[in-house]
Length: 181
View 1 (spheres, helix red, strand yellow):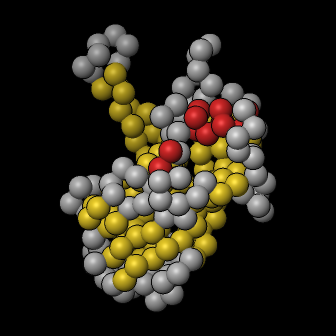
View 2 (view 1 turned 90 degrees about the vertical axis):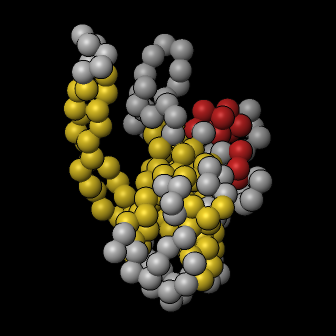
């Protein structure tokens, strides 16, 4: 069966700006700050998957996915500035750490399990921009098997890590849903 990759992109710079201005709490590991749902979390979270699987809401914090029984759904998370370090931009990394079920979870998908998987990224060579250069790294991915058709509402929690220091600077959660049809 097929694997449906869902990339969760967090606007960490805006999120941390909200924390620094006192508009949001940084949360804790056991009590992450809720980013809400629907339009509220759309300010911070953007979930995308291959267009062939997206039913609706591709690019928002709520994603409807067309999946079949036996498919695997795999979540990863990133943000636009992950790992980029310069004197003008603060860089953060995002790490998913907790999946909890809301409504409709039981019997539709399995509890996601985290694994570290090898990933490869090609980037422009400094000497010749059209010559790809390989960078290999490990990526955390959470995978779940589709057991049945239905709607799943769930919560993902994630932490934000300062790329320069490795210090965790916040814990957050949002409650997306997936329509499996």
